Amino acid sequence: MLRITFLRFCMLKLCFFICLVYGVKSDEEEKCPEFTDLNIGNALSGTELHVQLLLYTRENPNCSERLIEHNVTASEYLNTSKKTVFVIHGFRPTGSPPAWLGDIKELLLSSGDINLIIVDWNRGATTVIYTTAVENCRKVAETLKNYVDQMLADGASLDSMHMIGVSLGAHIAGFVGHKYDGKLGRITGLDPAGPSFTREPPEGRLDRTDAKFVDVIHTDTDVLGFKKPLGTIDFYPNGGMDQPGCPQTVFSGLQYFKCDHQRSVFLFLSSLKRKCNIIAYPCDSYSDYKRGKCVDCEAFQPMSCPVMGYYADSWKKHLILKNSPTKAYFDTSDNDPFCMYNYLLYIITWNKSIRRGFIKVKITDYAGNTIESEVNSEVATFQQYKRVKILTGFYRDFDKISKISLTFSTKTLIGPKYKLRILQMRLKSLNNPERVQLCRYDFVLMENTELTFKPIPCPENST
Image 1 (cartoon, helix red, strand yellow):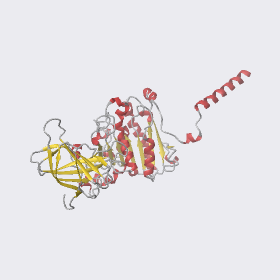
Image 2 (cartoon, one colour):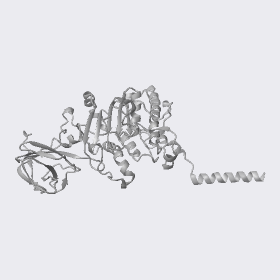
Image 3 (cartoon, one colour):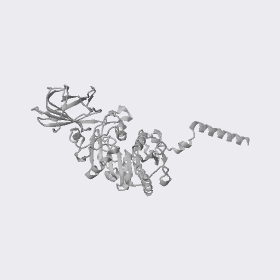
Image 4 (cartoon, one colour):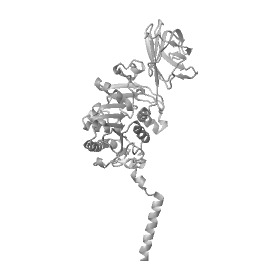
């Protein structure tokens, strides 16, 4: 008897010790389900697919509610009469929650009174075997379809649903949209995954027919992302490949592989902050955009050029009426908020001989602050009396410009230095087209020699 009592005492002490060391979840912790947090060990051993749907609203912005797949009416916070936004992550080779998860939750809830559903399929996405995660995508889509069906039965509408998918998550959103014959309101694809999907037909990947409006941001088309257009409108920042500020060599470690790919998410987050509108220019190619051939946005009149990100659907009607995919290009800075302020430089020369080269631009405001153009323009060909358009951009902007500095260069190390005889120069702001355009007439640029001058307002009736 004494022995049994002693054993019970030892068991109680052991239980107390375990609780003391590892802790016991409080009621509050039980009430606030969180995104699954795994590690590289889980990735190495592999994980079985498990999907949880975490609901946030303005009534519960800091404490999610785990939705029950076959019982929508059991939710305390879900309001099916409101817009519903799903956020779907992608492949997770390390198992940790996405670094951007907290920001996208906070910013989406601040953008409107919505149901925000974080689709957590970390168990299933966490693996070192990429193809395993790819195979799980359709299973995740099936789970989402089952829940959306429940929401529809409870009064929700497909038109009020917006799915935001990152990498593999973009294709998951496409699979769900395909199941509803493209009647979802909107799908946003953030650098949709390229590997395993590049050769797939439309039903095997995200496609513009998967929702009424599909906008896609491509930032890593040469490695992890999908190169070809997939949406109603496809945005290609910095050409869609190497993003400014991202490492250029493998010696930078993991960031070298994921920085370009993740930039799509951070650009989207920037659009929610609304520190500036990132304007995009519909164009057939990045090189044409760089040559200034596609900066008028005539197809979008009376509206201006489309903007990238959350508010891209403001241009939905124009894009849908066009009834063909639209590719849009733009350049960004190297960090948040990624704004770039674009100008068109028009130049007419009177050299008898053709000149080819580059022009670097600096602008100075009346306080003496100077900024230099950051956009690497394409080589321009200057012919007598023919106007050349050069796209240039700055990380900052000035309301009023007091001085302009120009430098002409052929970027050749040997041979004679050339002169560029300018008949007329005109500088036009693309971000603020209502501003007075600035002109200068009859001057000479000596190669590799900066010339600074005070511009004058261009005549109003000149072009």
